[in-house]
Picture 1 (spheres, rainbow, N blue to C red):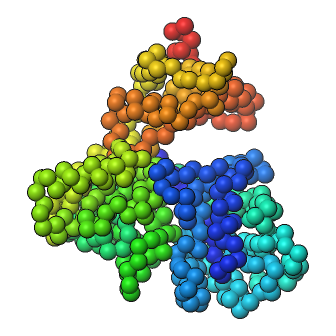
Picture 2 (picture 1 turned 60 degrees about the vertical axis):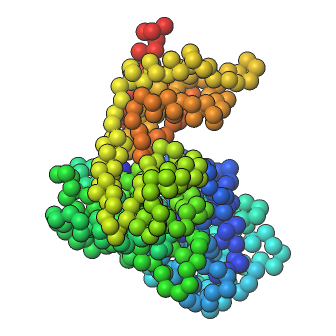
Picture 3 (picture 1 turned 45 degrees about the vertical axis):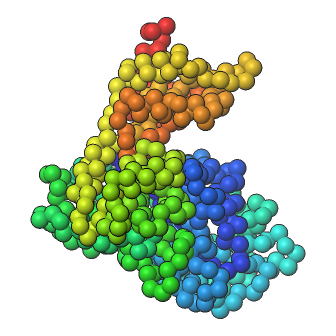
Length: 477
């Protein structure tokens, strides 16, 4: 099963507090943020998990469009692009306005275009804590029915805003993989060779079976049959490539890139060999990792290197590995769309990673591993509060997801999590894919058991596996 998280976009004029709201939503106590390991903290994309007032969990990607363009750009052209992106790719649009200033023509333009998208629109009136805050009625003329007064700085209206988002976002879409189409997205900054590689991959094979019209602008798709498997390529290139090239997140479409990542099983992260170690590449790798997608680091334009003997490659590889040490499981490959070097190997890599992401493990073997790991290196804790890890189960695939049950699990150090992940990777070949590791107190299992007994919750596959592992553990004792 593959899960596609909904996307929420924040749009509006400059200086109304879009970035402040973004930071509050992804860092507030109600919202649990999954931060990208190894990347900077000025991201414009964050993953938010929130338990709504109804008790239902809600999870979504939050995108701050303030990071797409610099403040010096003309407002009208900037906002046109922001709204078009939001209309195309977001499931919910948050329009932000400054509650201390009367609605301007620019605010009306934002609201009109957001409403025209037919997506759910929420008007967040920020800076509601200030003395000069206007009455809400002053903003009703913008035509947006859901209006919430907020203060990103003082957490006013944040819970109400999150509840409204939770009501409007679609449930994370679980799609069965019965069509056996492997979806591969080409991700990267402008001018790193995404379009050239896309065309080379599509044209190299003779059996190109279909060109698929993109459901969203600027995501090109083509299906190729390789080794009796259908591979769908998603190309996010060709966005805002005119004009002076800039480095940074403002030069590519965050929303469309996020959509391609969400749709894909595996992402090829392209990096120009002449411009390596760019911070944005690390940020993209972090987002792909957090999304639970397969990842291949692809160094492109290898033909442009004059001295490309083995020593050059051997010298570059450790440097790249160091900069992407937070995804040590991602394979690295050097390619050239001009000469075709290693292009076919990309197909082989994609299929291998696709299979590895879907492998299921035996609960008994997993628990034998856990007991050996604990015996070799018991988890440290506080005085009289040592974590007890009792058993482990695999609850999902693509990406592989493991849950460890026990007690005092809040004291498990991050380094011990890394130790367990390394151990899992030594037993099972998970190269090319992230694996997820969660810790759950046995009290939670008891609660689940009571809810199932009361008919309030269905018996899930994960619950059955946890019971099986629990029984096996008691037998060993």
